[in-house]
Image (cartoon, protein in one colour):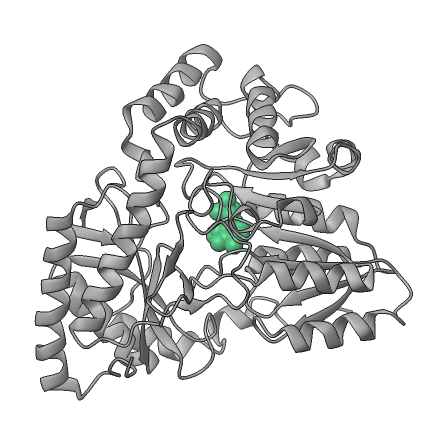
Length: 439
Ligand SMILES: Cc1ncc(COP(=O)(O)O)c(C=O)c1O
């Protein structure tokens, strides 16, 4: 006897097939466009120059001579690939140097390097959690965190994005689940660019005896005086048990890491399947990440950290002035003890402190309108990312713009002019876009 259900049936008739076909037909699909130049502030895509406002290259180090030389030296010394896992034949001295320097940077006892950030999340969560445990996650956490939780088969308790009251409720419920409890949040949320209130989250975890892991993919290399991330900025690095990060954003390469106590990291080193059963990253990727980290930790790092956030502020203010609904800066409740002079914080005349990240989301609302606006900007020479449902709630479509430290003022000004021109022709044809909230 054989089943009559074809497992491939879903590829023909899934819930997004109609909208995907319509977007292709109208030529407004914002995905898989081809880059034909290095990842820089201005790129070549599909035969034209576009200002790149849709990358995670926050420090602009992908084109840095020192980082390219790090990749080149590693390539020449160790070849194109390692063809095996870190456990067997895939560890080179660069991995060990990188792990040591990440631990110094994060100020932890130890660190472990994975081939991607996604695997770091899978490899940590899938190993440390088991079916008897509970994992509490913010609903805005990155997909790789959810994948790690699902892999672990721990009891999953999500809470509404950045709602401390809901987190506390989940911690209360987890008390009777009977296993260990881990809370996992993004430091900087990748789509909205807001941060997790880590001081309060640390307090909650400590009250309930839960462990805390923070994904610093968009915080490391951006926030804090040393660029070590959200936990550094908010002065709680020593209260966070594990910090995960990636080399695919500020560190201008590809790969991931976890930093924490020697005991936990060493356990992961011998038991994490996403670490053990995959090939080591290619030497050039490891060499580039190590060189980028060294640039960040040198005297050249702080000016880059300051510049990316100045650029974010310039873009945010410029879009706001031109009538776009830019997501407002996030106010920090209890800022008394945070690093007040650190990149990422701004104080206003009333003494309130707001947080800046390189991610500047523009609210559009309707998915279709967002795709049309994306296309109009693309045709006019600006590339941005789109966040459509299900990446955001229904009716919450956004253009996700982001800056690099290496965008100069003239390029950002040009991008803002494009936004202004596109807005007026777009609204004449398709009706009004959401406007800024009164400040
Ligand atoms: C918050 C977050 N965590 C993890 C990852 C995965 O990192 P990687 O691209 O290195 O796999 C990403 C990247 O998309 C991310 O945004």
